[in-house]
Image 1 (cartoon, one colour):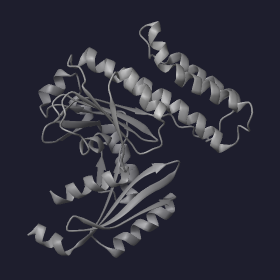
Image 2 (cartoon, one colour):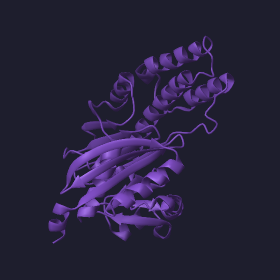
Image 3 (tube, helix red, strand yellow):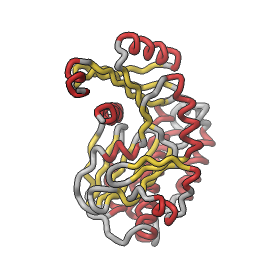
Length: 313
């Protein structure tokens, strides 16, 4: 009966995330699981709330969705509570979402805090970034999946092509004042370079030599241009994020081998919804010894796709 009703009724799907205090969103008009219209917007908070009200007035079948990128979340290749206890995960402090072949957990405090923040937007669905990878995965064995956005990086490793064995998430640090002094830029980048644990022996330094040269070149350029120029700041942040991304991916793989499995990875997949350099992809391949298949995906479309699956249940 529900399927018959859906054939005649249009649904409005709204996916959004926040970037630099702006609400980036996509509105889809869907009928019988077919997208009739897709439009993207960028609003401040007040404009976003007004827009949502207009959508609900226009169509009561409106569903609002977003993602929560807190680092206190992960996956377990089982829904069994005994498996969680075996891994040393306190069941009292988490919320568990049991899926068909595995489960996702998230810290209760982070989830409750986020839900309170989202209440003013009448959010129907809050998704984990891990699900954004799951709907794009292939059924290849022993594969690492990487999702890179402007705000975070996600690693998900599958051993059987069906359920993930390992998960990890990294959030980029945000400059709250949105300005950087020349000295602070230099100190921050120098500190990051010194702290990067990318090498186990001196020979591996060659693998990241080119990336280091990019950083030095960017720093040299800072002496020749006005640091207040936002484009220059963006360039520095991009290089810094790529260094952090490479470090995070390598450390995740190291953690996987040391604590989760001795099965060697055979395939690598990289999804991204932000601009990334070919140099970064090359360095990931050099550091992981894997051929990386990369694909740009639309995060907002993926969120709406997840919402539509929930509505169809």
